[in-house]
Length: 179
Image 1 (cartoon, rainbow, N blue to C red):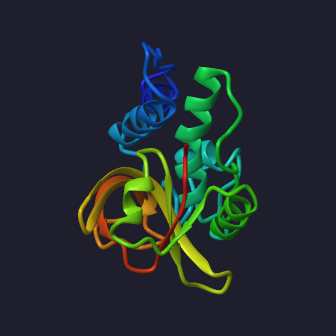
Image 2 (image 1 turned 90 degrees about the vertical axis):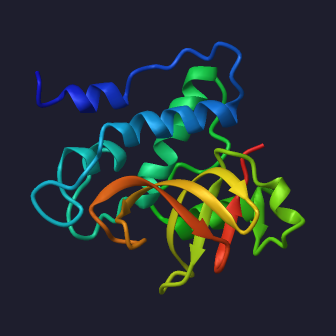
């Protein structure tokens, strides 16, 4: 029971109490990060990875998108509304869906950054599929953003071992917007 307490705490329902979708996404994201999710038993393995990846784990299951969309799924379920972004494990799939549904913001100028609400996803460009990492935007502060990310580390890896809060710049970033 004690071993699974953090997993249960991460999944605890947050009462809306007038919160918007964006506010609930950030609240659920913080609730998850506060439980210190980490890989156990090797790269992309363990109970946290399985939680965020709907039962899957192993070297090939990079879990940043699973983590990033999990609090969104929790917030949408709490409010009884459809997912505002695609729940998927591939960052490129999330980007394509955001483009198809007009929720995409590519390489925003400083003026366009005001469109990025808390709870939106940053989508880091790169890699063989066009994207290599994503996370939840908590806030935008000029040339930086505060984020919540899984499958990362203090160096900003796109294949790290934990879920943490970070600060990032806007270079190589597109966004799946939550409205």
